[in-house]
Image 1 (cartoon, helix red, strand yellow):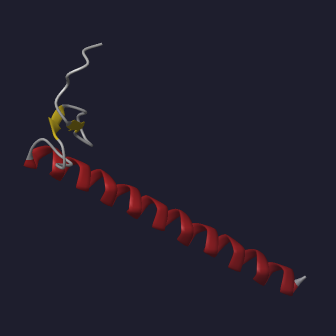
Image 2 (cartoon, rainbow, N blue to C red; image 1 turned 90 degrees about the horizontal axis):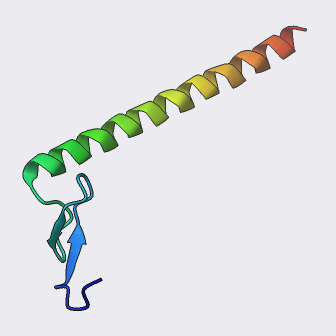
Length: 65
């Protein structure tokens, strides 16, 4: 492995080598990453809503019994 690598990091989306301090190699990768993060947040929110609905339903059913 070369010892004299310049300071660099890797793009959060495509893992390409980029200058140190930049999180993405291009605006395209940044947009793709932000889109993935937004979808993941929406999916997690949906799961939480479903979980709360199940807990409330179970609580109401237990009150009726």
